[in-house]
Length: 105
Image (tube, rainbow, N blue to C red; front, side, top):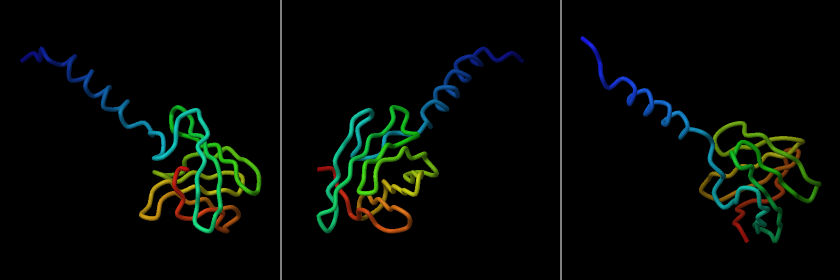
């Protein structure tokens, strides 16, 4: 028996694979820095890459390009940015909080 609809099913499978690429983290804009206001008056800025795989941060200890390590977690040069959670976005540097409960300003 011959399957006539094979090509459309392959196309749907390919499109579904494209949809699984990382998205820009919540509160950020691809290619533009967004300022975040955090608990205790702390601030930092972040810019997501177009594909959502990296985030550039500017914090108290300088700036760094962070790579996605898992869903909503970016790391690099001593920084850890967590973009998902009940308390909002948080930024750590060398294991110490640089911003907690952060929201786009």
